[in-house]
Image (tube, rainbow, N blue to C red; front, top):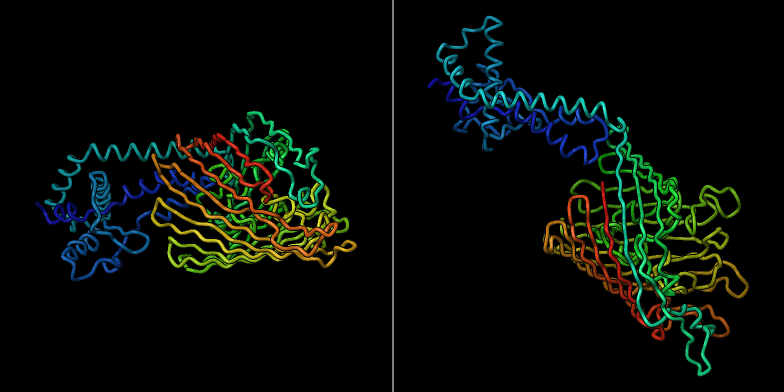
Length: 565
């Protein structure tokens, strides 16, 4: 066997095979991962191609002491048919398939033909040509297959170019179908009514509770996202939404029973969200929210398994710390600093408007970008290892009572009625402090949680201005991935929703604080039926709703089915 044959057998490059692999990967996976145009696909393929080298010294992982050095040197310098990867490596120890061998052989054959055509055939011996001819005959089937794969790839690329939705935009859809019902002896009485003794009473002085008369309901939520990219690194998102999932609070008497994905607009299609994110450097990025901005979407919230309202928690409180709900619904910007593989990250953000609806663009008094409701947030994240994440978060907020359809709502309806309006519906400032953690014990087991504190102050009102109040909340959770089946998730959350722990404001001499403590217990199991369908049965239990033990325990059962496409 000739020297060339021996060298090819041992060190044949993988030029065509690697190119096909990169292109196939791009078509099969990268389009789903954010490629929005055929131009990007072509650029991605080009960046993955293996480059021809002119000297074996160009390989960073090939040393003169390697046993294959001379053979590689011969193939490179004599025939010029050895190629390397873009990062300057040869990867000589990786396994070689018959397809890859055929691809390398084809590259050498092409190179030999070039040498002959340019009158340098003296470099190629008859023995070499005979050996190459035998190899070409032996691998004719593989070479034909490779040619077929190239032709097929070109046809698929042409079809994509002809039928793509847009050269810059990708359409992503999500649909939720949900069955839900609430159970319990009676509706909860609002904490403010219990504290101020304004709740209806029976003749014997006991609470005149209303029966918890709930029916099984079926509801839906539909979202279509138009994700556009103009540079390959930025993203503009327009989200369309229609939904009819009514809040459970009207039936149960407390916001503590709200579902994570509730909301009702009569299934009318609206532009629910509009934002643009772009990088300033490899570590620095900016996200601008034109409407419906939410900090929990803009920065790490340290609850990766349960934060999603379509695939994670079924209850509103269990998704993440309420500190990330400050300013929800507003307009503004968030800046994230996250060095690759660095242990420290940082985020700052500002949202104006919020409340019941976005009013950051309203020029009327107390409804503008700088003179109305706002939330400013700063977060420092620590990740000493890939399995540990910690976050320290601070938010400064102002909420006034003139927001149409909204008003003061300190914790975005995740706690008691009193904690969201500790002084009634009057302008309120607050300092919020939060500590969040997520620890992954293994690839399938994670524990996490959060603790938060807030001090609030009334800004106006006779006998109210200057009064202050404090609030406290916490939660712990457990996530078990791939339990029973790949892609499944068992999630359990237990905690105390926000409650007023201190308040200098009194009504009729009664200090406005939550009397007892509510507890939120939630368990769910997400079954991944297929890549595009997940079914999640879940149970939410609220003990002592509205932080008062005179209220009966309330249960909410759900069966959420999520379709993604």
